[in-house]
Length: 151
Image: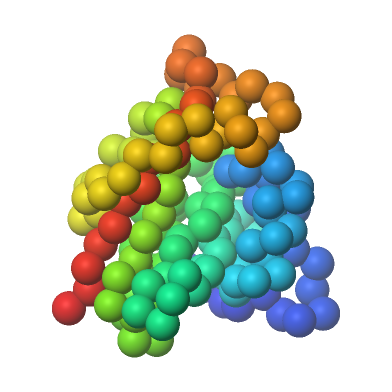
């Protein structure tokens, strides 16, 4: 597994980024403010995540995405764990991540990785996204915020 920072002259992998967040406006906003990391296998980008500093002690993991053909193989978990390691190496004390109320697989993954639910932002997705998002037969309305404290 090779994870590397997106080069300054490289185009971000929007096809992957938009899998995890359908809003191009929001994706471009946190790409501009954060750092994008790529997971490559045999020269092909198959995963991505973005680290976004919230304050000097806290970083947020944004947009964990894996190519659809490679999903279900533990790559998402590896990406989350790599993001946590990077945050710890940089010196952050807290790592946060958010997901939709309908993203049951992601919510389970983040808790398995050690995150705990700290906040629910009601109607976040209703307010910030033009089109209704439905996952697992559930309308995505609320953002569930999770946090991990690093040692």
